[in-house]
Image (cartoon, rainbow, N blue to C red; front, side, top):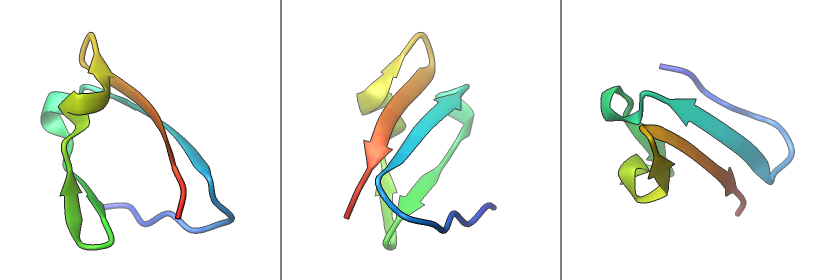
Length: 46
């Protein structure tokens, strides 16, 4: 997996969300809630 660090907020774009698992602070994020045409675009902020 990948680990992201830096100054939030983070703008995220993920393609092929059906094959991706995203964990944030130990919780699974359901990417389909943010997806259109199997691509998710969202921001992560504390």
